[in-house]
Structures are given as structure tokens and as C-alpha cells.
Amino acid sequence: MGKIAGSARNAATSSRPCEILDLCPMAGLLSVGWVQNGGSGCYVSPMLNRNPPIAGVTSSALDLIGHTPLIALDRVHAGPGRILAKAEFMQPGGSVKDRAARAILLAARADGRLTPGAPVVEMTSGNMGAGLAVVCAALGHPLVVTMSAGNSPQRARMLEALGAEVVLVPQVDGAPGQVTGSDVIAATKIAQQIAAERQGFYVDQFNAHEGVQAHGRLPARKSGSRPEARSMHGWLS
Image (tube, rainbow, N blue to C red; front, side):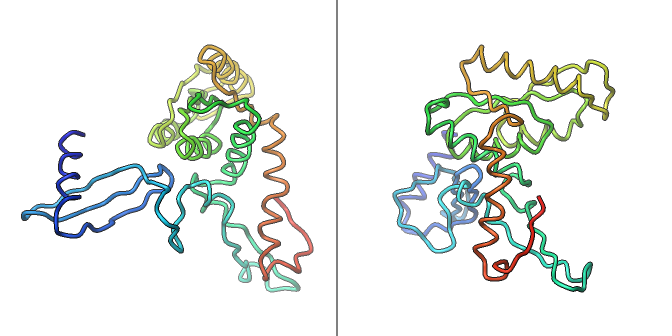
């Protein structure tokens, strides 16, 4: 990082303008590229919130969670009425679990169960872990997830790429690609144990009422605020 940081300092003092190449709100990073003395480089630095807001640019991935578009399934259902699908795959973490992850962690920070910088621990098979990784990166918390060894290696690598520490738990009675209830219970117990040992916050997604509320109310409220959804007669999640 020393060489990169040095190049960045040179770029910052150069008379040639820098060009913003990429914005990664999930990690809260700003990637700036420049050309100097016939060469080029890339500098990644933490995004600073002291800059004035810019239309169309968010300062945190938290602001992106929940704002997924509605898609009309007119080719599937020609009428009467219309069927609208909420594109939850466009969440920063790739699924509807982002909503629960944000709601649970913000509530825990607000009431003191999650202190600044404290680790977050949870059992996951993939989606909730991805949502937690996004939120933890934005809020500055390390994330530890336990996962049954029966889950695909790709899921573990995905979570590691998002910054999580992944602990694989040996299966009890399942097989690779076939995770049983006993396997999930075993991974859950290890998560609880790690949370206690590291004095972290155990998410407990299946029993956290904030997660239930996020799934039950937030999608409908956000969709209902849009003109095309004001006459919606039903919602299925």
C-alpha cells in the first residue's frame, strides 16, 4: 500500500486532473484513476462524507437497500389487472435479506446491543451473510459467519470476497450439497459460541423481530409510495 499511497499523493498534487473511475458503495470506497508522467495508476481511499451531496450518488450502501424497482410481468399475465415483481436481486447484497440485515444491525446499534467496531456473528447459508457483509462494511463491523460444510464452496468464497470471515462447520448427518436440519443446528451453535468468545453481537436472524418487520412492512411501504403501485390490491412476499 505504501507505493500506491505515494503515487496517490503525487497524483493529488499533480496539475493534471484526476478522473473518478469507479464508485463502490458496498465497501464505501472511491476509486480514482489518473495519468501522470506517461503512466497511469489507481488509488482506492475511504469515501468521505464531508463532501456536498451529488444527485444520483449515495454515500453509503445502506441508502441503496430497499430501493429496488418494480417490474410488470405483462408477458406472463395479460390481465385482468397486473402482476408486479419487486426486483430484490438488485439489492447491494443480491437478495431480500439485505433488508433484514440492515434493520437488525441498525436496531442493535441504536439500543446498545451492538457497540461500535464490535464483531457481528451469524449462521448463514449465503444470502443473509451477503446482506450482513454489505451492512457491516458500511458500518465498520467485522463479520464472522458460520456455514455448514455441506454448502457449496462458491458460497463460502463469495462471503470471503465480501469481507466476511467464514467458519465451516462439519456436517452431522448430511452430505455435500445436502444440508440437513441437524447441520444447521450445529452451525448455529458454533456461531453462538464464537459470539460469546469474541464478545460480539449474535444476529439470530430467525428470531429477530426487526428482521420480520423488515420483510413484512418495508417492501409494501416502499412500493406503495410509487404512483404505479398506489392501487395495489395485494402483496405477496
